[in-house]
Length: 117
Image (cartoon, rainbow, N blue to C red; front, side):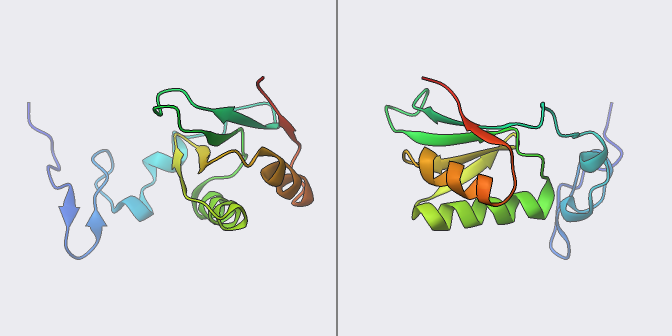
């Protein structure tokens, strides 16, 4: 069985969504199938699992998507002076910056708390 739209990249529009066939930036299936999960509380963890002992600050439950999530993540990385990434809607910041992130999220109006041990 062959896919109807085998194109995955176009030089004019960039990456193409394999489900809807539109550019990833204008994908409609990603927005419809990715509701924000959680109870409205942003949790901030310190995590070292599967990272060869390196510590990261893991932020889960942020009720944002798309560009607003990326803007928040960028601001938090800038405040902490470190790098990071977004994986599965969770924000990762390199290093242990839980208190800085907690203060900033509360300042922005989120219900946030430290989690984990």
